[in-house]
Length: 79
Image (cartoon, rainbow, N blue to C red; front, top):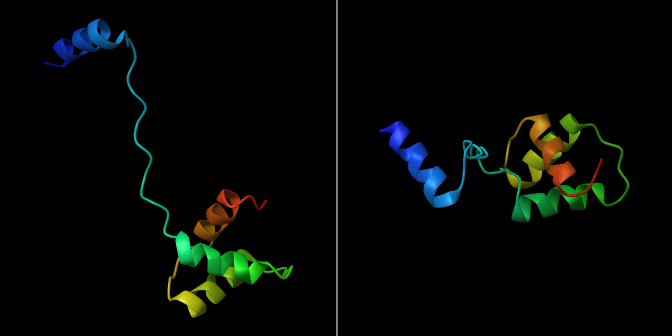
């Protein structure tokens, strides 16, 4: 059945390689939580990711890993 699907994909779509795999879980820091995170950093604070995580948990109740905070900041344009 796999070979039939490959032939159909090549015939119908012109595709000769596998499709890209899906992403992953949806980001946990979005919307109001992201606004709270950016609001904390708006004053030019020099916080570590761990400190940002702890303050975000106090403010919103969302507890995440520091890397999740870093990914959210990269999505928001912070480096």
